[in-house]
Length: 177
Image (cartoon, rainbow, N blue to C red):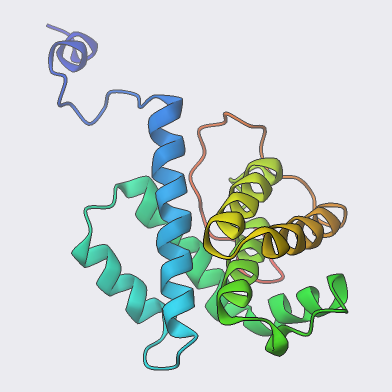
């Protein structure tokens, strides 16, 4: 039996390709985990990295979810000032420190993914973060996140085409992968 036949014969094989829907669900979970970690860190008791480590240990997040969450959190932690400066430039009527904690965490995570996770197509990241803003904060936050990300998208090169099978690798601030 060839390795391909073995992969097909064994449904538990890790070499079997995952469906687009499964990858999407994993990445959506990763965004939510990153948001939870950054939001909890807003209260100052623990760092976002520490919170994410705890969350990942407590939940059975898949590899896609964990990798994307780590990339987003790493981007927020390492480039927080740069992200806050961009938010201030893109939404001058909404000072970063004046935003509600939930809205600040949403925007920081969203910008982190667009800026530092080059494997994510911009349109996908924008749509997902707009939906998370609607879910966790309501219509005004949805409009704010959509406006900020829409303006940001005009200044940042787009990620890979939708449906590509790249990982959510982290792009360091000011550099490329």
